[in-house]
Image (tube, rainbow, N blue to C red; front, top):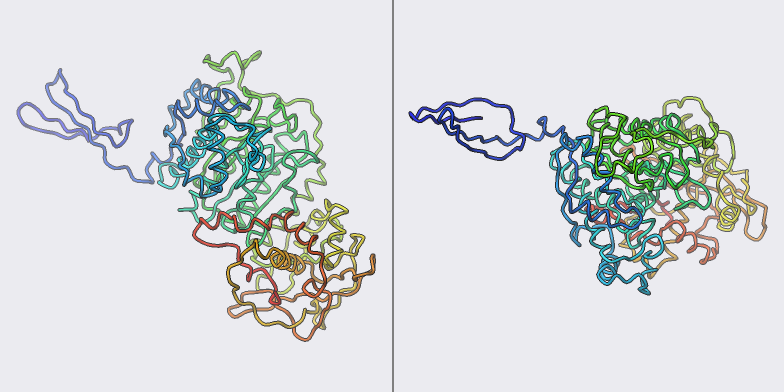
Amino acid sequence: MLTREHRCGRSEEQELEPWPSPKKARSGRCLRNGFKWKMEEPEEPADSGQSLIPVYIYSPEYVSMCDSLAKIPKRASMVHSLIEAYALHKQMRIVKPKVASMEEMATFHTDAYLQHLQKVSQEGDDDHPDSIEYGLGYDCPATEGIFDYAAAVGGATITAAQCLIDGMCKVAINWSGGWHHAKKDEASGFCYLNDAVLGILRLRRKFERILYVDLDLHHGDGVEDAFSFTSKVMTVSLHKFSPGFFPGTGDVSDVGLGKGRYYSVNVPIQDGIQDEKYYQICESVLKEVYQAFNPKAVVLQLGADTIAGDPMCSFNMTPVGIGKCLKYILQWQLATLILGGGGYNLANTARCWTYLTGVILGKTLSSEIPDHEFFTAYGPDYVLEITPSCRPDRNEPHRIQQILNYIKAQQLQLAASLPANLSNFCQGSEMPTTSRPALDVKGGTSPAKEDANQEMSSVAYSNLAVKDRKAVAILHYPGVASNGTKASGAPTSSSGSPIGSPTATPPTKPPSFNLHPTPHLLASMQLQKLNSQYQGMAAATPGQPGEAEPLQNWDFGAQAGGAESLSPSAGAQNPAIIDSDPVDEEVLMSLVVELGLDRANELPELWLGQNEFDFTADFPSSC
């Protein structure tokens, strides 16, 4: 609103276009017409057109701090300079990031780790004897000032998340974030602080369900581990999965634990994949995930190490393929936090993220790169496009279809909110490619449930190592003999369902667990939980390697209100279940450590205002 005050005392008001800088009062004097003017802009509502303008996290100090990382020197400056050369920054709302406080970083990372990182950062001590324990050294050297860098990146992602919470925008961008390997008390893979986890935890203050999508070349293991026990955050990662390739995790059968079971989705991909096939996989997976999970906000990690020409020499992508995946997610019109990640060909990384910024803004960029500070780095052609190499695509269509069928079955189980009946594990059968029939959500065994379980079986056990199969047999897992093969002959009741286990009193909520004094109790409970998943199979008889005898299992019973739970059937006796067998404690603990169950007391849900790790919801009543 413009108010004119004439010399005669008369005033008039006039509507004007919104001032470029909102929420600021401006005044001046018109020398020609002799009146004073003053503009006062009203408070803009959260759903105004301004909220559609993406937020771009930037400040010269922040870029300078990110340039100091030895593995990617000057990358942040190259990215921002190219965005600026295309004048894209003028179409976004630039927000200066704050530096994360120790308290904010401690919402995920341990105090001991943060204090040690701060100490070695101040001293520039890369040879501290305790650094190895915290993952510092080799790929994560403890250089001087590294703590300040970590706090800057973490603060930038938290700032972007807060902009989404406040309704300032629908999309917030921090291209210098996305360091997804860092663990709670350990640096890993060039990542000192897991800013992606910090951003998700901040978004959880407002949004009930967060979907994390990771399109980096490497598996987002740090983020998946942080939320592997919760149903409030779903993680989806498309990544290279190959023997010896870092971090070595993220097989399709890794689906989460406890209440977080089926909330981790992993898509292992081999070398040479190109745009079209990658987009088809991504679209297929995200369609299933979106329908089953119904997220309220998205955190998207767009590492550029998938792009052709990257020193990792793995995928054969271009920014166009990643841009199609980004468009698919943006059409959901959810609050979206966009992060960077890997990308070690600095010029191609700048090309990629500048192109993706144009996708977010709906702008088509000129092929010719404008003249700017780093112009010479884009030679010899000086164009925005990236051409794929001649690397062969090693992704077999049959294997890709198996993986997609497995994930569809996984999301079917999630959408139905039913415990998984994995009785067809170890069958090694081919996955059906037919469409899925409707699921009987009222209980019992439905054709859809059987199809889903069958689809999940062959892929999950196709990568089971020989030593793992032997461990399964040693622990008397139903359905696996000592040689790791499937046993048969599980008895069933007259109704056709598996005969139940011994009668026990209904479960009651146990007191808080002290994990360190009683690790074997925890191990026994966790393995009993695993035991309950293999229904209708026989176990290896103790002392008779290679042979098996029938093993009764748990039946599904209904509670009041129609909810289903795992309950024992009456009258059956079974001496072969884990609780009554002598089990090697060393084997138990090795599995606990391998599954990460010894770190159950370090879950981020402790800071979410609730504890997702509830034993009574997941274990049979005899525990």
